[in-house]
Image (cartoon, rainbow over all chains, first blue to last red; front, side):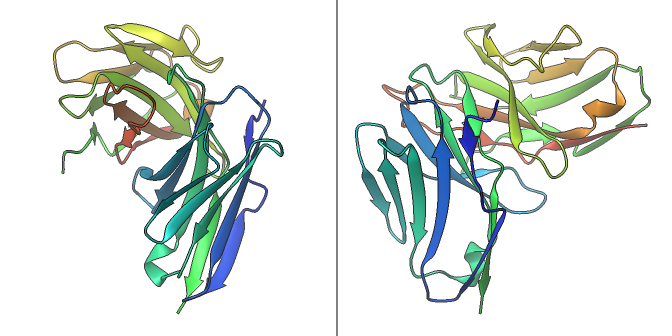
Length: 112
Length: 116
């Protein structure tokens, strides 16, 4: 039962260009969506989130877009930097916040 | 910045033995979670805990698993009789109570559990 899916296991981008990471979900009742970044041997680190009542949230180089009709969200990183190289997980939760559903992750490599 | 700390970083245990994974959440956080990640797979929710009781648990969290907050600072996950398939990275997370869901989870660096 995979309610959150990240269909691209990996992505390579040149430094300075835009990175676009995608995520699809199946449960239309999700209220909140989050992106986490994970380096090897560390736990996930929160990056940016978006409420289901919005379609865009921006924080510096990071922007998350939500398309509820398509049940799709994306994370844009611009400009991409080598330090952005990590595994990115999208996650979603219902309004209780009791359970967060994670995707399988996308490994981003930013090439200098 | 306050952190979630997990100990040990690596635990090796014989199959059938009990194991306790320890976590110290961020001090003013009120929601606590355990997740696991089997090598190469997604991060899977195990259990959430609030107000000294389990809020929600997944199908993975069967009778072999239990959680406890024995004092004001620790949050533990116990696996009573470990199986080979319990080998995974276990992450603890905590979250501050907020008006909405805009308080994200903060994760520890995980405990790698290896069952022999």
